Length: 226
Image (tube, rainbow, N blue to C red):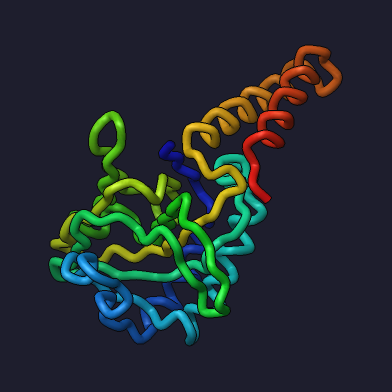
């Protein structure tokens, strides 16, 4: 499942975030990669334990936790605090898969079920920098407007193509879902969207809508791990 969430941040909010990021002290991103990924990673990252990463990370967390599409699609159990990266001057990240088990600065461990990229640069301000995600139907290429975010399975092979002009700036993080299986999450998401659409047209007291809601919650009860 690949889901784009548009306008998670407004243009003015993106501008405020970029004002802080553009004056920050960026570090070599390869230092945070392990094994094979270290040789594939050519970008810059902020120090997670210092400002402005600490406060901006919390701002992004607050926003995603309040976004209904994110909650419906991810069914989050745990969210890794967002990190920030920057690609420029030919920077890229070759094909890789995200680590299955992650540990936060606070020592919390989580399984990466979903990966998220929040774009913080307008697509016409840089060349390259596409997020390419391999899936069952081939490679999907993602390059969204600033303030929009994409969710995709952490198990996917993915890469960031070389940035040959300008700078690609983004936040990225991982989610451990209550529902581990991507196919199950996709079915629940599609069912939830259908329920929301019918609620708007048929009304919440419609008998068939009540039945669909009954099915949704019983499937969630069956598949969720708490």
